[in-house]
Length: 152
Image (cartoon, rainbow, N blue to C red; front, top):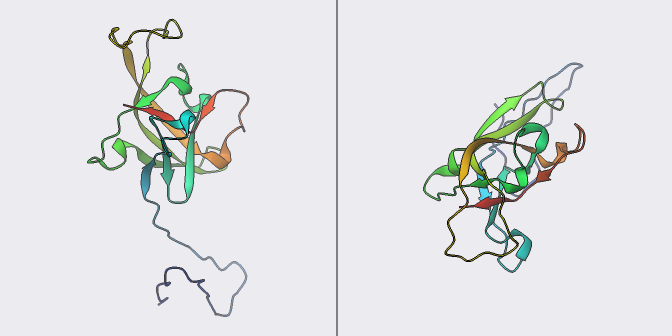
């Protein structure tokens, strides 16, 4: 029986190791929405996904048929992680856990650079969003990528 580690300390395993010995490490990997300081104008009103210590991104390769930079998600603090679920994909990028969830994208262009706030909102359509760990992006050809998603 291995005793549990203490937070903030290194964990040392002392034993006689043999060839082909396997060690399995299970870590809690909770998923959370991250927000930036509102003074960071580029990420204002946006959210990013983090699972454990990993930040996730959204690439065109995993999200065909729409611009990931135009995607929006509904953030509900009472619904853990907004319905995004973790799914391990051993066939993808040497084996990664992706995050899948629902979002929306506009069905029409924004129009002029500026428009009155009273104008009708641009219609949207639902899409499934797939995020991969940020460390694994840019391995499948050129395409759009974003970490920050617009929040509804």
